Length: 421
Image (tube, rainbow, N blue to C red):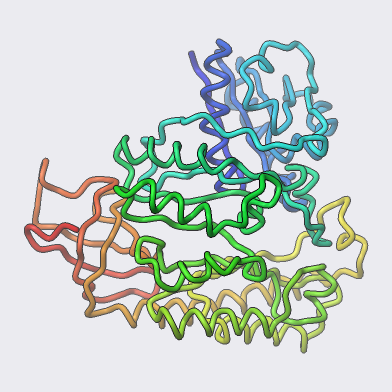
């Protein structure tokens, strides 16, 4: 059988891509390319359409299936494409029986879903860091975002199911697990749990052989006291938080319908940095949001240093049809491009400071591929090891490296004989 899945977008979509691949093969599909698309921006939709056309051009004898948030929010658009055989929604793509239908459009009402279905324990041999879904959906309605209509309302996976998946992954050799979802810090209330902190505590207590647990993107204003305490004191919870900030100006945050202020973001980062100095922050920032003045942009630019954001993801604003922000007064494309470049330059300066501070230290590194890995704070490391052949570090190993230098993008290190964590 020949089934290929092309994933776009977030970690959750990538994890679901594995399940989608298994479901399609279980259904007996052959000569099939599945575009597991993203819908977060208009550009993401364009990429999904482009991927479907390219797939059909390169493999004209293959069926092309489009799924993911792109299909969930814009199903008829893809169903009308001559290259596309079938369109499946986000829930349908995980169900082997959905692939047996001849319907060109099978997209259910995602907003009617009230429970999260735990993903099957799919092996993840291609990943050094394994992903575990803890929730899906989002109850918030940020003005730039369509994702709640692609994923539905927030729904949490039961604690026992998450712990069982984590235990299974550790049994299969994974030494780092990343908890992922759409709005992970909303975890719990819909299933009677107090918050994400309780889930993290359960994983650490009930899977004692797991050395490293990491969180994907979080909303700092939603973080519960138990999780905040573990972010400061729990060594097995990696000192790396990726924050969904989006902007650093209060008026723009208000127009985005975000739930935090600039002052809250800065205070949160300062508090954690003071109590866990080795912590590093990543963040998402949007450049050129509608109505953003030069003064407003200056506040976002300054936030990169004020929050010490080492791993910055910059998104030039791209209006997403169907969102309130798409109807707001838009900025010129050249202004958006300039502001995105300025944010990336500021991010590069903070990244260099973070890397420089670790030169001369010893770091525990999870190997992702030969000669490359990640530190606890998520810095990428390239290294040389004296071992060769079967003794050389392989993907999934944790090794201790001496950090000798950096090149502005990654750390450089070396491992002496016998140095393993």
